[in-house]
Length: 461
Image (cartoon, rainbow, N blue to C red; front, top):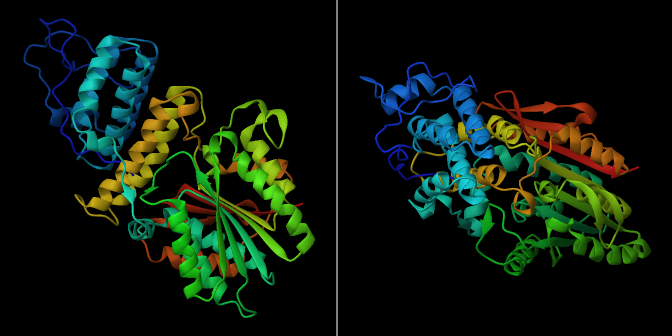
């Protein structure tokens, strides 16, 4: 997801032209009350290498980022400028995984300083960095072939695909018509494997109706073709497997809780109730965290209440009486209104994709650039933006479990066959990936023991 290939420009100019910003030997980044002094230190001009040795520890870099964020928020231009310079020297964009991670957060803080207008000095510094190499902030638009290959590189998405497809196949067994509503960040990349499995059904394949939300926003990974074109390709693929498929796009947006999609599904629900033999599958793959989570009075087509859009969306889905709802998302919390707290949470989660990339992509490869570019898009959104522009609002599994229960859903345990499929998939990847079964047999993908992605299945109760 995002990579920076440029070389950082020289340190920002000193606050006083007669002085040089250096790091005093006594500087302790763990002490938030101690600041870098402005002035010359006879015989002491630390090099980038010496700074990396003393301050290059991941915990230390995290502390520096937090102090820098606090300085920017409190308009402390002197401290912010000095920490930015230190971070420049210890977090090169082509360094190890922790340095590249820190570099992404550094750029995001610079971007935030520029956009906030807190300080002319910081804005000037940010502009220099922002325009040094425009390609470092742009994400790739994938062809279908590129995206299919991209998501297969790592279990990050494949875990959710495998677990969700197993739950769906068990839930729709025996139904002659299966309506899948696909709310997926990966643009239906899960569907071909599901079609292959449906085609092998002993009682013959059902009619598959596939509905997608034609999102009005662009979130990485991004496609280079329209959903209408994607639908044509999926219908042709299904036909090649002797599966009849209908494809429909409903223009909708996460910013209002996919209200127009809910409207359309409610109309179809009347026909489904008359038929009685149509399964409704709501497949949510890393998309629901883009729905705003703040609680406030909302007026939507399906409800008016003082609640979060996420809660209202789930209650509206419950009203559709779906056969099964699959919820897959990243297990982290990016919802704090406090920048420093949010930065800490993001830093302590997003080290994982940087740490894993060395196991499946070589340095300098195009796919690695695309992969790290998407990570940095997420970092910038979490750190640089507020309000409606801050859309990366992950919630941990525990919070989603409470939301689902409160909306009237009960968890469904994954079968042993489903778990075996997930384990077989993980065997194709690096040894650091693992699988945990938590309460109600929810599945969690782990990296070196740390939670990464969760997969849950639900039915109305």
